[in-house]
Length: 248
Image (cartoon, rainbow, N blue to C red; front, side, top):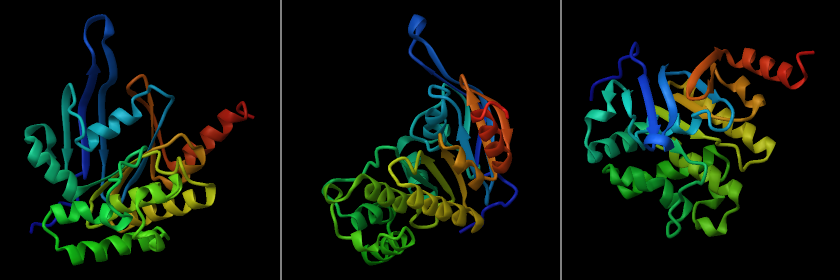
């Protein structure tokens, strides 16, 4: 298998637009987004409600198609693939953490995590071993054989994060991954995401929490579907703190 090109972004969006509806009901969710995320980089996306954050994430993960522009994952333009090929790229290269978890009710936590790996041809035994390792990394190995209805919202969220991290995912996309977690657990999850980036993965996270910005290498601010500002994680945290305190 060919090795990844270290000079090529893991994720690249080129002049990406997304328009919903037509005529008087037309809504421009994204307006000409140019963005690249490289291996080892943790990018946070922030902005007010309706700024296009979640739309950006769904396009990056191949869950929706842009109205214009290109989305590339490891150099592969997703718009040029059929649905089957797109699904294969998502299973192999992209780990996605949804706000609503998207766990299969009839499967245990370990089975939910192992399923994408088995669909890609990994043996059941190997997939379960990888699933247990991911659960252990998130501190919830004891939940492996519980079904989603037996888990709290925070536990389901951690299972969903484990599913996104299992295997050799080169790109992790997380939509408010700490929304259902208490502060301590949320920080632990961010530490895991940060460690994955330090090990060579790329991650992009949508968040409303200023304190989470410090975990990122770069923070991208959206407004009305456009990138309006970029800053380092530390700079962003300082800007947001100053804004909440009236600039004092």
